[in-house]
Image (cartoon, rainbow, N blue to C red; front, side, top):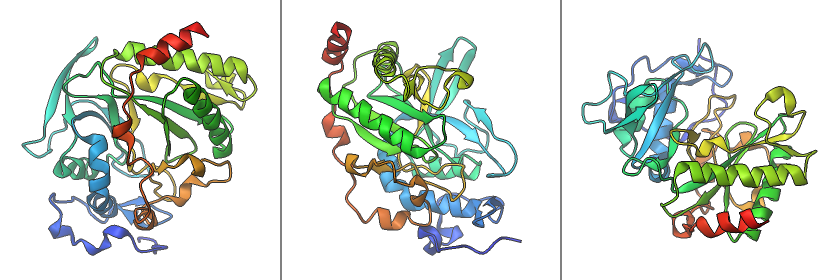
Length: 307
């Protein structure tokens, strides 16, 4: 039996038969503690899509399918699944391990069909389909080994200070779980290897300056309570969760754009979830100037190399 909901959801007003895709097993419970179902997830994406769409448009999507929600296992898929709408856009990409036809985001029907297949989060490339090796953003994925968001918030402040010194405008968002993502909008040009290299170089300098707070250790066992400054979200064919997407985590949190003034150790990122997000959207979007802030990364790369 489905548990009682704590609060109404923003998408409740949309009847299932008015959605642009048919939801299979709509009553399947994805979040047992909250009683949220697959239909609730699809309805939320229908509701939030006007805000989500700019972050998916023309981007390749790697799929993490969790057909039983928080219960059971998930699996990754790069190839477009069977059962997607016939006009789903795709992009053919050759890898060392073969060729895959990636789903390209931007259409509501595409996103709702993916949610119906158990894709709770939206994992997007940093580049668009027309230039898959040339990102238009740089991303730092801050993963606190302690599990405390407060540690990620303090690390994000250090990163912002360093980016400010390099004259790069940055934006922060909750990962939707315990961490933070710091994005820098950039002009298309540098290869993904160069963008990843910049993130590695800056992360290495910061972890050397604050060795008790931050680390570049890929090994979890060696992080020892520090915040991992993951640069690999910037590599070719790597992904990061999109702003405004739902996460597979208790309370059904949403990866939420933040103003830098909101990035405080006391913030609870779980307060931004599918039950509360309607109220959040009534406020000014702190990322509304993101695409007006595209910057040339080359001067920052040169400046960082001189330090």
